[in-house]
Image (cartoon, rainbow, N blue to C red; front, side, top):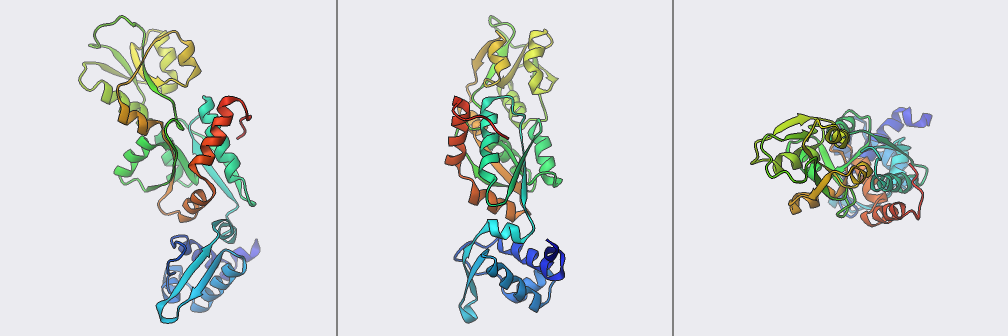
Length: 304
């Protein structure tokens, strides 16, 4: 490990990170360009490239004046060359078997080749994005709907992997204390502004109704409905408390939003190509969905 902190080791890490932005078959930056980007001498850049080749992280092919092509790249070996031996992910609280399956998938599939995987849990996409941007986590899990919202605001995150429908949540439903209520006028509606999904679906559903929005934590919606402090609210049908509550429940008529809302995505910081490359290389939607399905069916014990 001490070699990583020598001058040569520092330059090797910087060059490795630059190469994360190059795809197999593309030309790598010239040595002169790497000198400038890595703030290193020509000799140290050349040593860094030699080190990365020696550890099996990259294969290069020189074409003379036409530059040098990256013929192969092993991002796991590249990570070790950068001194990266772990990944920390942040995702929603595992209060459903669907989330437990997702956590198990990520924990299992990223614990390979000497890479250690850790999962932490935070309520609300806002908190997860902040943890990612602050460097507390290397990647975050959210819905496709939430990612699209943050990306549209230029939040400095990028999509690394998208899974299929129903990998993030099942259906969101409208919960009500009074199934016979004919009008929504004056209804007290629970809304959690820390969750892009819940707040967006709520505002869209009640856009043309005269309602009172009551700030809540989404995990408390069922309890607040039962206590009479809310009249209605939108929440996830997967939550066992929803199914056991006896509250009136009906699906939302939001097919497009529901699809984007139910798809799990893994996002990374825009300035972290190494994590993005590791996620892309080590994970696939099909592998995640297979582990998740087995956890949800009881075939596999949740482990995270």
